[in-house]
Structures are given as C-alpha cells and as structure tokens.
Amino acid sequence: MMAVVTTPTVVTTRLVATSDAPELAAVLAANREFLAPYEPFRPEEFYTAEGQRTYLEDVLRTTAAGLTFPHVIVDGGRIVGRITLSGITRGPFQSASVGYWVAESANGRGVASAALARILRIAFDELGLHRVEAGTMVHNAASQRVLRRNGFRQYGLAPRYLKIDGEWRDHILFQRLADDE
Image 1 (cartoon, rainbow, N blue to C red):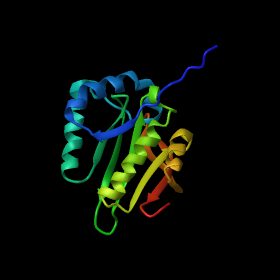
Image 2 (cartoon, one colour):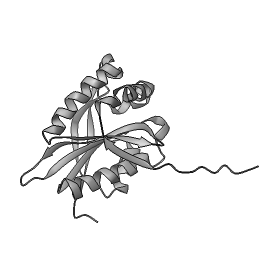
Image 3 (cartoon, rainbow, N blue to C red):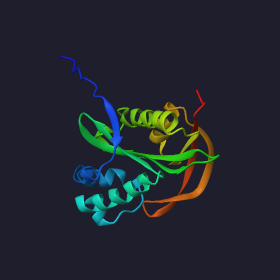
Image 4 (cartoon, rainbow, N blue to C red):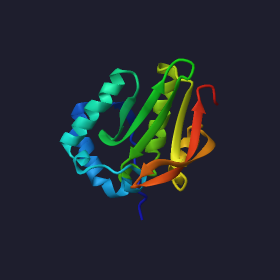
C-alpha cells in the first residue's frame, strides 16, 4: 500500500472586501449546520450573497472608524473562514476581542491556529494593541486549543455571556498580552 503524501497549503488572512460576499455566503450556507452550535442565530438573508454584502458593508464602516479589523481566512486560494478583531479600544486600554470561525473542511488542520497567529502579529505589531481577549463556550475544547497554542491564558468564566444557537451560554475567557511570551 502506497502512503499518501499531502502538501500543506499556506494559510493567509486578508482584509475582507464586499466582493467576498458571494464566496462567504456559499461557505456559510454549506457550513450552516456545522457552525450552528457555535454561532448566534442568523436570519435567512445572512446566508445569501446580498445578505453578506450588506453585513460586510456594515462591518467595513466600523473598520473605517478603527473599531474592527475583519479578515477572511484563505487556504489554498479559497476563503475558508473569518477572523475579526472587534471592539478595538484605544487610549490606556489598547485592547480588542478576537472571534473566528472556519469551515468544516478546514477544521482540525491548524488553519484557525495559523490565522490567529497572523492576526495577533497585526494586533500587536501593526495596531499597537496591548491586549487581545477571546471567549469560548465551556465545551468548545477545539477553540480553546487554538487559543492556548497562540499563547492565550484563561482568566475567567462569564456566566450567560453570549446568546449562541438561541440560548445564553457560559464562556471561558482568555487573553493574550503583547508582552506575553
């Protein structure tokens, strides 16, 4: 029996564009069931190209204001997810939250870990942030591994933190500081 050798693809991120709407809508629609346990309820139009275009226009307005930094995750030339720095706060806080998702086909292959490493370099080196935080549902061990691989440390538990899949869910809170090693 011959061993199968696969060539790893290079995972990159780039700033999202409204022209990404059709591809994002297709990825989201194809992964709707896979992502449902981890995502807020979304209306039907969210899964359409026009719905994504509207959503991205709103997100890009907050980007222009310096409040968010939304990226698509690209693997093998295809969009396989999103990663976003949001709630960017300047002044003495210099902080943001990070959220991400990847398609089922990219899950468990290090894609989210690579995308998060890239976003952290941008957050700390380019945006000059001091702190990036993230929250995961208590049972989301895979996302917790992604965070820990990228130097995040758990610092708390937030009861009924976010409404996911129609219910208020507890989240474990993590942070990474710019000077953490």
